[in-house]
Length: 335
Image (tube, rainbow, N blue to C red; front, side, top):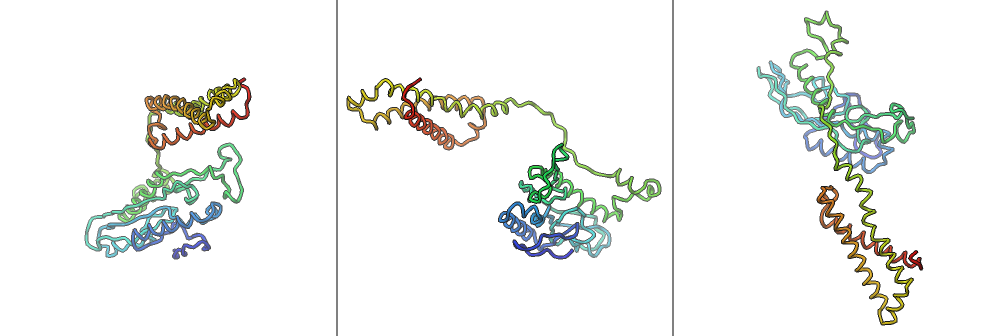
């Protein structure tokens, strides 16, 4: 295939033939190219990525450490990442030049490392059913969004299949290596069955697929408790608000504040004393709930840093006390 165009915001997206292989000099060069592409994608809007800019990011990387097909093959170590010896995924894969022992009657050997695109942003994956599957809403019983901004599909209906892509890439590599060593593609039936089993039936019989291992699903009570607590904890921490508001309004209604002022109490001293009392009442309430959460094993209390949790509780308490003082100015009766 032709060489890839340079990475620049104004360049056209890569639309080379499939499979499309880009051979680079080293693994570091491949990683540098990936990071440069990610930097470019991070700088442009999602709409432009969906229109083809996301095709710049490769689906996978392959680094050959050793490649021998056996027999008297003088070019065993000169395999090109884009020639017929390479696997044929429906993806753009980047690979450095393969290396291996040349010539001789050595046994076949294949050693390589690989990686697939495992970015968690769905639009950074090519829509070719390798690492991402686009599911139209019409297939789920709804109406698909056919707007140009979403490329015909809603952005929330893109399914990432990272583990399946890893298995598929490994299978492609091993199938191509076996075909090169044996001289027969796995899509073709053996000679003894060539006249018995048609080619299309053999391909159906030898089709490979990936399926996750079964597992025993268990109901986790802690998950329900955490979901319930997510709605209850904010209300529980706000419980001192009506009590404090009642006390402040009561002092104003019974003229207790005027009596204290006539006896020399300053307003600032009254506010500070009331605030300290309210914060103490709030902290007792917060410690009870936090202690209960730790005993029960709620992750929001066990997994959050102590300083972060204290800052959150103190900030919430200050907000509750401040809101009580503000609301008390609008009320003249505790009723």
